[in-house]
Length: 327
Image (cartoon, rainbow, N blue to C red; front, side):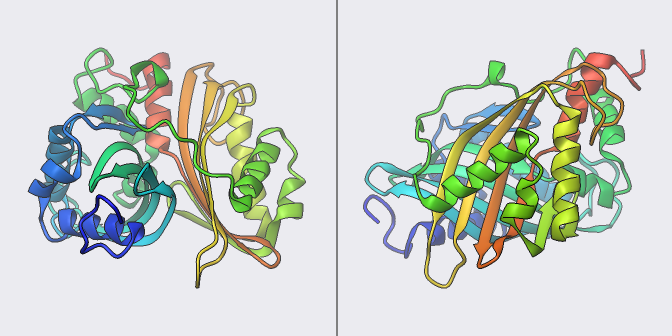
C-alpha cells in the first residue's frame, strides 16, 4: 500500500494491527504518529479534537479495564491508498471492570460489547474518525439502565450546565475526509432497505431479510428471524416519527471467503415525539448517530449489526426535560 508501512499486508491488516498494537500491546504512544495531531473524533457522547485527547481517553479506559481486548470482526472499507481509505471496523471487545472510573465504582464484572469505528487513513495515519461504542450494553452488564446511567453521569460531570455535551452537528469540527463511500451494489441494497424501514415500509423486512437471520442491536441485544428485526426498527422509528433520516456514508464490498457486505453511517435528527424505544414522548430535540453492518446470503440479509449509543440519546432527552436531575 503506497504511503503505508510495508509490514501491513493490506488495509484491514493495518486497521486491525494498529488497534491491537495500541490497546493490547500498550503502544499508546504510537497514537502520536498513527493519529493526526488535529484529528476530529466524533462519538455520540462527545466531540474531541486532537490525538492528545485520544491518548487521554485510551489511558482512562485501560485504567478502568486493564485487561480489555479488541477483537476485530470485520473491516468494510472503500477508497485507495493514494487518495485515502475509509475503514468501518467492527470490534467485539471484552473487559473486566477492575477499577473505578467513568462507569462508577469497580464491580469486577466481565463484559463484552461491540464498537464500530469509521476511520479515514492516508500515508500511514488516521486523520478523521466517527466512533460508536455500545454504551448501553456496557452499563446494563454493570447493573444500570441506560437512562439511569445518563442521569447519574450528568450529575457526576457537574450538572446540566457543566457536563460533557453529546454530539450534534452544531459542535462538529470538519475533518479532511469528504468522501461518501462507493457505489457497490451491496451498499446500494442495504441503503434501500434502511430507507424503506425509515419510510414505514415495514414489509421490507419480509422482502429483504433471511428468515433465519441473526441480528445484533444496541444494548447487547441478539435477535433471530423477522420478528426481531421488525420490533427493533419499528421501535426506533416510532420513537422519532417526524425525525429526518440521512445516510452519510455507504460502502458495499465483495471479498474472497466473505459474504457480500455493506456498511452505512447514518443519522436520525428530530423530536422525540412518539411512543417507542425511548418511552413516553418528551418533545426533546435528539440527534442519533448510527452505524450498521450487514452481510447478505442467498435468501437475503442474513447478519445485521446496528450500533447507536442509547445513553447519549437519553442524555440529550434528560438535559432538555430535567427529569431525575437534582436541583
